[in-house]
Picture 1 (cartoon, rainbow, N blue to C red):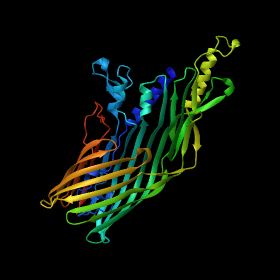
Picture 2 (cartoon, rainbow, N blue to C red):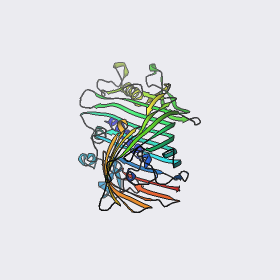
Picture 3 (cartoon, one colour):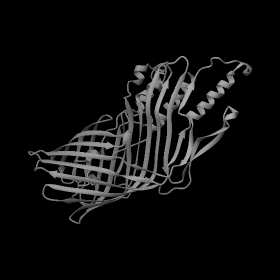
Picture 4 (cartoon, rainbow, N blue to C red):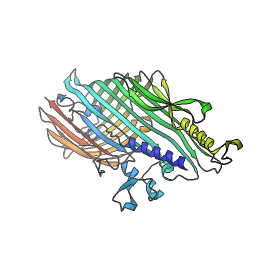
Length: 466
């Protein structure tokens, strides 16, 4: 049983470490906010009434996090301390039902951070044009329910845990966009993006299983692999001797090193969009964003040597090795098995790989109130295609423009992660623009200001206009 507990505590620590990261997304709350300078990031067909240039690094910032599990599911009040201290969900004084109540079949935290280093939009060439230099980071973690069940409720049964994955990518993009009015009803737009890869990391535990039901033998199996693409990145390994001297030595990854920095990969992507005005009251729109790839120059891979660990107990052993396998020999054999199963071995550079950046599909519908045209209502559907970290969201909004230079709105969203409220305020007189908004209003937080529900966001920007 000590082996099972060691494994489950390692897995729990890994989950908390990954979940502590910060993520964000594009401000979907601003989709129907006219003359919000960065609506073109949501649909390249959108233009603006004003030209603008971003205040460097302050024009458009997005930070946030979204997920269907988080801090409040991992860290709970300690029942034996009167709820005044915190503990993990694996505390034996917390019931299994209560500890696992917050977890879903597929538990995920996902998002991205976006920062506009430089950005400008101007009228010309028969339409509206944008030039952008952005830095973007996206990351996520996905873990099945079986992982948390195994961590909390280890017993004499079989666990088909499944796959656990974590991914992160960072890159810069240079984008050129143009939107054009085709006729009085249809407007189309597109962007061409050149992508400069900084780093990509993918870590996966595949086909995790733990069969503890047999009285004769316990079997834990799974495939561990890590792929990192980054200029100058290498794994650092340590050489150790097996307990069984006849097996010689083995190497395992115990650290990483980055020697210098530079371009890790190059790629391209496109955004495509359209807006169609059915009549004075109704408008529909659609967009496909970030359809592209990055070709990485290296792929540093590490894997576990053995896919299975078998524990047969300590039956049929003798104190003296002259009469069969001794207790010490048995312990050494288990240690060697565990060394091959739990440690990663550096396989070196596999010579590069090509990865997507996660495409997004958007559909919108907008209705202007005939009796009071300063008030509009919108419905927005957003779907992110990104493997284990895909998600979808539906958002309805009310948008109000009391003055020519002031507008904003409030909205309600239901997504793969949660139900949330959002808002946006856009101030855009001639000469200056400031906007701020949230797709997920910040709820309760821990003492460390970590959102308990893993759902929060903030977006703001300052721009010069004319």
